Every structure is written in C-alpha cells, then in structure tokens.
Image (tube, rainbow, N blue to C red; front, side, top):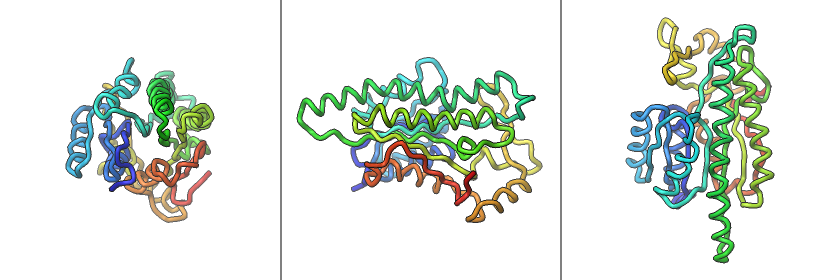
Length: 276
C-alpha cells in the first residue's frame, strides 16, 4: 500500500529530468499520473516507466503555454482516472541575458511558461476541485486533502545575475502560492512551493566543448553551465555538491504526502543548505 493510493496527480514537464522523477516518485507511492512534456516521445517514455512499476499514467504532450492546454490537461485527469488530487507545476526552462541585452521575447516567454501557465492550470482546476468537494459534502463523506506544489527557485527568493525574467517569474510563483493557499483552504487544499537550488539536469550539464542548446518550440535555447563555474557553484553549497533529480523529486513528494496535510503557504528550499 502506497501513501498516495487512489490519488490522481498532474505533473507538467514530466517527460525528462526533475519532472520525470516527480512522476515516478508519486507513482511509486500509488498515484495515477497525468504526464506532460513539450515533446510526445519523452512523455510516452515516462508513461511507460510509470506503468512498468505497476501504476497508471496517461500522456498529454504539448506546450503548457498553448491556448486551451490548461483545460485539456486538467480534464485528462478526470477522464482517465476520475479525479484530481495533486498538481505539480514543474515545466520550464531558462533563457538568460543581462537586462540590457534581454529581449521582450525572452522576458515574455519565460514569464509565460513559469508563471502564467501555472496560473491557467490552477484556474482550470478550480471548478473541478470545487465540484468534487461539493459532491463529498453533500454525500456526507470526508473531503480529502488535495495538494498543489508549485516549483520555484532560489533565483526567485534571492535573484540571480542574468535571470531577471526567470527570477521575476519564480518570485511571482511564490505570490501565487500564498494567495491560492488562502483561497483554497476552504476546499482542504494545501498550496506550497519548492524552490530548487543547483540540481544537475540537462539544463545545467554542458556537453564536451560547451555550446549546448535545446529546441523549445523551434527556438534554440542555450543551456549548460561551464564546468569550472559549476564546480565553483558547488563549492558554495554547504553540502558541497549539486542535488540530484531524485532528491529534488523527494522534496516535492514531502509536500504531496499525508504527513504535510497541515502545511500550506510555505516555500521549501531544496538547495543543500544554500540560500540567498
């Protein structure tokens, strides 16, 4: 018996990296998972990995910023598994520049994916959650504790050079989190955030020789951290190293577990002791 048996979890950006680990962690504890990735193949691969451990999953590929995506994503959980219990707003990437070189497109894109998309998903989820709560109360059954975990960053709690767009979006996530905790407490929903420090993913790892990039909706976005800089960054972390994707997923799971049912409106920093 898992601690999340019977729960339905929605996880954006769960085809790769931290999101994939979150989906697998929740599934290991018994949750059925709605998987999302910008690309269909990674989403399907995560679904297969979830099914391989004996849990259930469906894929909803596509951009979290696309018109109508939020409603489609939420409805997929209802249609496939009959409910909605956990939402993890994880999808995102960085597109860095110092402010004098940052374009409107860079600013708008990052704000849209990291802040506007979670807002739209939570807005789309409200009627579903409200309806489920109303049904339970009318039936005289206990209203289960539902969970929202929004992913932020230490860049959102303390800022970071070259990331005015990302830092602003991740700071905005914290305001959204605190507001929804107040609005949704009456539904027995806890709303918290996890702010990641340095976690090793494809967005931080540079290929040999540098110059790594990823394709995001036709845009080539530079990724990766210079190995020497990465080593210097790790030296500033009290634990002396970057975190793993499994450790990042574990922090999210803490706020999805029954043990956190009376924890809401909080920001958990998962950074190995590093904090601005």
